[in-house]
Image 1: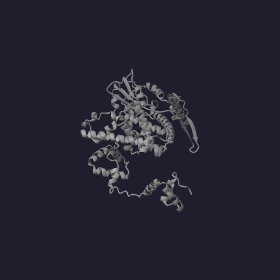
Image 2: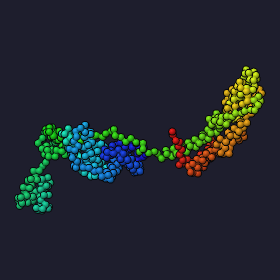
Image 3: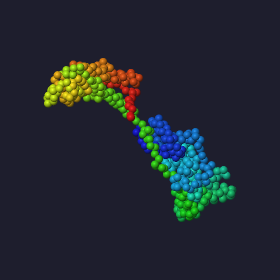
Image 4: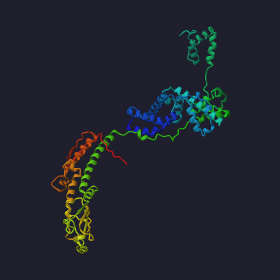
Length: 161
Length: 361
C-alpha cells in the first residue's frame, strides 16, 4: 500500500472504526486511542497490507485491541444476567434508537461486536469471522442469539410503554 | 460373463433397469430371480424409483409448505429473513406464512427493529493526526527550512546593518536625548559662546534680532538637538529657543536629534555657548552596536569605498551562526559554495536539530 492509499484509508475508515469501537466500549477517549493504535499499526505494516483489504485489517486490529482492553478491565456483562425490569422505565426511552442502544449494551461483547459489524459495515459472516477470529457458523449463531435477545428486550419495553 | 450371486446382484439389477445387459445376461438374471424370489421384490422397488423433475410453483403447491417448520422455529426464520439467509423458495414460503398468520407479523416487526443503523454524526475528528507525510516531502521541507533559516539570518544581518546606517532609529535618539539633556550655566551671562554648528536667529529669523540685542543679559537659550550623529553637527540644524525676557545666564540644551526641522534660535550675536557634552555622545554611539562585539566599526564599511562589504557580512554571519551554535550546544560551520553558473558564492549552514521560537504574549 502506498502513502496516498494509506491517507485515503484514514479518510474512508477512521470514522467507521471509531464508531464501531465507541459503540462497543462507550468511552470516547479509549475509542480514539484504539483508532490511533490501529492506524499506527497499519502504518508500520503499510508495505505488506493490500489496499483492497485495508478495511478488514483495520477492523480486525481495532477489534482485537478493544478485546484486549475489555479483558483488562473485566467489564464483561451478559444479557442473561441482567434483570430487564430494572431498565424498564418508560420515561427513559423516548425513541427506538435509544432503546436499541440500551439493548445493545445488554448483549455480550462478542454478540455486540458481530451485530455491529453486520449492521454498521454490512460484513458477511465470513468477513466477520475473519475479523473476530471465529468460525463462520459461530458468527451466525452469535448474530441469531443477539437478534433474539434484542427483540426480547425491545418487545418487553414496548409492552411496558 | 460374471456369475450373478447375492453379493453382486445390485450391479445386474441397475444394468437391467438401465437396459444395458444383453440376452444371455438377462436369461441368467431371470434364473437368479427364480432361485431368489425375495430379491425380485427389491428389483421391482428399484424399477419404481424413476424420479420426475418437479416444477417449483410454490403458491400452487401450498401443501408442501407445511413441511417447512415455520411454526416450530419461527424465531430462527425471522432472523434468517432479516439477515437474508433464506433461499428464494423459503423466502416466498415464509412471506405466505406471515400473511396467513397476522399474529406472527407483530413478532417479525420486532425483529426488523433490531437492525441497527450507523450514527453518521459520530466521526473521528482528528484525522490529520493519523495521516502521514511523504519522506521526500519531509526531506524537501528540511532543505527548505535550512535555506529559509540561512536566508532569515542573512536578512536579519542586513536589517541590522541598515538600522545602523539609518539615522531614524528608535534606539539612538533615546540615547542621545538622554545624554544631551544638559544645562549650561555661564558665569558671564552676556558672553555665552555657541559653536557655529548652531544656527542662530541671525541666520534664520532676522526679525527678532533687534529685540534680543536690546537686552542681551536676559537671553536664555534652550537648544534641542535632534541628531544622533553629533559628530556631523557642522551641517545640522539645532532647535533652540531664546527668550529675550530673561538674562542670558543659563543655557539649556534639551535634546539633540537628527531632525531636519529648522527651528529658529533667538539669541544675540554675542551669545556663545559651549557644548562639551556632545563629544562624549559621539563616542557612545558605536558601543551600542553589535559590530563592536566583532571588533568592526560601522564607519569602516560605510564610509570607505575601498573596504569590501562581503568579508564584513561573512564575518557577521559567522559570528551569528557561532552564537546560534553556542545556544544550541552544537558546532555549526558556515559552508561556502561557489556557483560557476551564477558566478556567486553561496553561504549556508546545517540547521538540523535547531529550532527557533518566540514567546507570544
